[in-house]
Length: 304
Image (tube, rainbow, N blue to C red; front, side, top):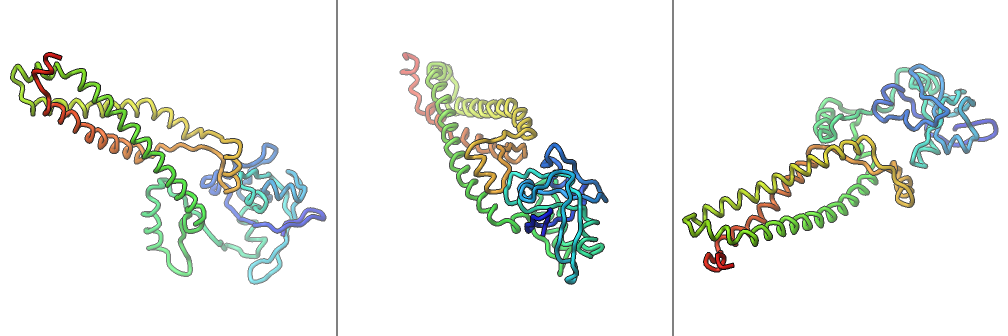
């Protein structure tokens, strides 16, 4: 229980190593301007905004924590409020209290004991590899869990959002495909006389088909390269400076416990996958110039 004067409310007390916690979760960025972040060994607490509002606490006030310690021993302590945490999620803001790990162990009479340890994988793409490696080295009674196992509701929400994204990107691929097809169609229509002259002076149609295929592929390569050249700097900047959302969309994300921002990613796999899809589209589109050259009527094209 968290208490201030005559006010009391249930709360979740989390003991942390302030320095390491900030490296993993960037907790410091949620502190209100009039507060400050905890230091290792410091006697103080960080309180969620809604919890602080209910208990009428401000930075510098004293928070009383009453609970049950290790093996049923009573736990009680008084701590100064060092900072107020403005989380985007109401559930976090009205329940969470952070305290330095040594003080938490002393409060709950559990010296040198920990209930959990969070590990952050630098590359999200290697999460499964890291999970398999850690599970092979850590056995019972300890348990290794990924974030997806701890938050299945969030996984379901991501999967549903991803399904909508697949539909949207599918529509985008169709638009891109027709755009490339229209460009190739126009080039073929404008160059019929040129092709007819080349064939009439002795060039074989198969040789001309090969040249046209190479040209089509080069157009695809140039398009992909140009896209990378102009989009990557913008995406790189946006990955460091996400767009803050507002209105109903922001409120919906806050209610789900998600920071209301439109985030960007520069994971190489995302870009390489799009490049592969574009090249496949280009290869399909190259069927049209092959058929056009094979069916070209030289006499009619020369007169046209």
